[in-house]
Length: 197
Image 1 (cartoon, rainbow, N blue to C red):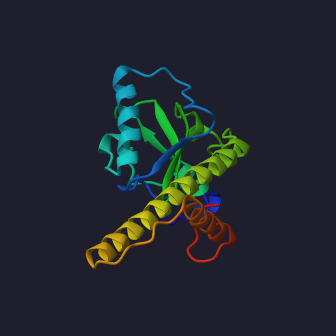
Image 2 (cartoon, helix red, strand yellow):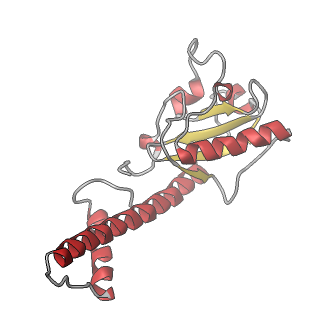
């Protein structure tokens, strides 16, 4: 995870969902579904979440048939993508894709594509709030990953020292906490690689 801070500038304008594991987030507390979904559409929605989180490619039925022939103004201008549930239907998932995350805006009809300008009814304030929440989740996962990496390196060094007959010192809980705080401080200061705050 080394994406820039999730913001409008970090949004991807790809016409497909990247086949790499991503965190899935929602605008609001829960998924906003504005249209009734058939059982097959509900299954496709589940498949979408599972595939994105696992980094698996989505089946072609999620993408519009004319994807390569003409522009998608909502994607080009706002970096908001739409996917079809159960093939060409009027149940669309509107989302924003980032390097390490996908933010689901809502499930609705083609109404946002028919607006002029397209997507004018999306609430920017709610999207910005959701981006901040996703930043926190990604940062938390990063800290867990870094802390786990430090622990694995420490264990490997200890094992190597023990095999060599050298007693390996065991870090105290205070030392472990200090390492975690140092990692968080380094991330907050912007030194080293750029990670979400």
